[in-house]
View 1 (cartoon, helix red, strand yellow):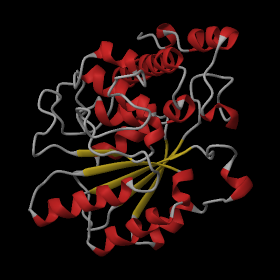
View 2 (cartoon, rainbow, N blue to C red; view 1 turned 90 degrees about the horizontal axis):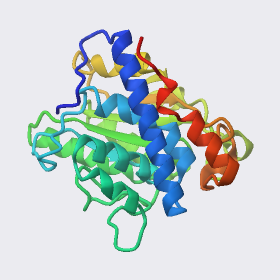
View 3 (cartoon, one colour; view 1 turned 180 degrees about the vertical axis):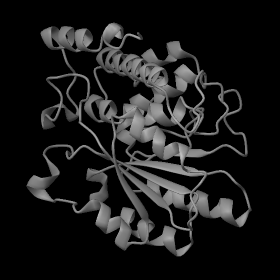
View 4 (cartoon, one colour; view 1 turned 45 degrees about the horizontal axis):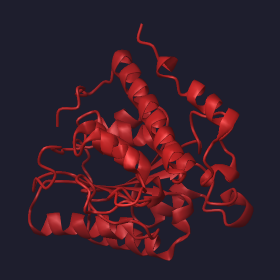
Length: 290
């Protein structure tokens, strides 16, 4: 994939600044798409944007925008389908479909619905119902093993989604079949649709739970490109038959101060003065290369 940036074993400060600028530009695009549509889950999309950028703009994901169904591509499943608007922005920017189409998000006749659909180039699965993405990813990873293929499968889950029993069924299944070609990433922002997880059903200790299920588990700062890319750069050198789960600590609504860690912004769209503040805070000049 020609992402304009290829990582070596050590990410440079210049590469980090480029990734920060790209993530900020994409957050602004998400803002404009949701404002125009009057719909969309903006805060959950902002929290996972750095994770999406670290995978899609560094050459870690083996994908070909001009050939979305390339048989040897890595598969990426957005299990937290409410963040569809973030993935659409990434895919269009990479060339999977025309960028102007982004502004049709959820409009009548548009193929860009509120949740991801596999009819869209670059989208591997429909994930409107939470809790299914990891199982789909595990099935794809198992098929790759059976067919002796080298592609990997990545699944991005929300932490509130980990309340679903189907997540833990898949979590048991993957180690049983030694799916070391499967990587789960949990967008761990501590919030679900209406409240903090700790206030109604805590999911911790998350790392220890996944390890007990037979996974290799790591905790990283989900907004640190240094930490995220360090993990991705070491994937090829893994010498284990365990699947890998990355617990990425994030901030829901990241990048817009009045949205950060505020449950009310799970589905709300900023208007008036709120919108002016959001646009200012997501200014393209926020990260300047020196």
